[in-house]
Length: 183
Ligand SMILES: [Zn+2]
Image (cartoon, rainbow, N blue to C red; front, side):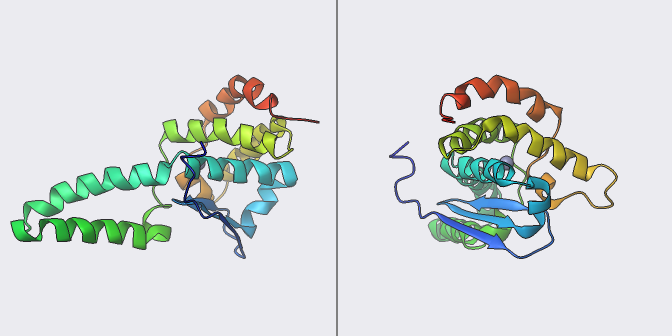
């Protein structure tokens, strides 16, 4: 893990916005919106979100998604590009993807596999930070409840689909996380 996170520049931003949202970018830039605080409710809830976002950054989910997208776009884009421009267009697409990061990356929904992986890692991270990982499931339940009957579902849910599988997986991940939790 030490190698994986080498070169990361962790940055945590609280954004004043009623939007229920949080996201991460490759390299360790994490943003939490004040709107999500009513769902996180307490420190353990906030630690759940932060642990989850940090996990996405460490597992390089955004980078993975970005490079998948790059491959797809390069494939399509190069078809019409002059051969001489090849590396230049590839570079431009990569620059564009990373340059517009905040728009281009976090709006992509995380895959279910990535979500469950981030949940699992996130639980251990919150435990290491001194928060009881048993509280995490409460946050996801409140998040799921917030979308019920809402005219517009929370933005967070568009990138972090919350369904029963997430809540069902929690008890399976808890024992590992509890090893890191010191009361
Ligand atoms: Zn997620």
